Length: 152
Ligand SMILES: [Fe+2]
Ligand SMILES: [Fe+2]
Image 1 (cartoon, rainbow, N blue to C red):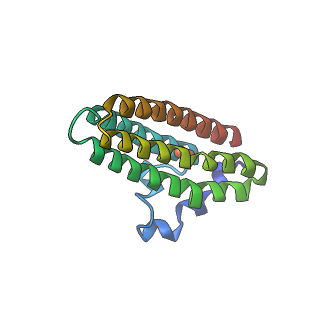
Image 2 (spheres, rainbow, N blue to C red):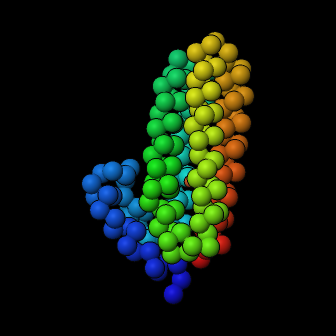
């Protein structure tokens, strides 16, 4: 039995019903963790674009705050629900999944740094910091998706 078919319990987690998590995984119309996380990543990518275009205007700080919230929610899902469930099924992947989790703080730190630069009236540094974040996070998404693909 493959890992995908062993996962239905994950999607019935009562915490999803309790509204603890942003949205329900079943909204994607499937129970495949890879597709679920890919869909979440696509939504986050769109937030990155929205934030990137807001950096030059008055909305920059609030756009960053919204992006931070989106990232925090996604990280909480991965750290407290998706990844622990996956490594219960595949203990050999625990180290790798924990390694991915360990980098989450870096991305939040870069959002904060971007906001700091905006507040300090340093828009060029804010853009540079944000672009670095966007690049790092894109690589993180690719790595996570590849890890899940390898687990199938
Ligand atoms: Fe992640
Ligand atoms: Fe992710």
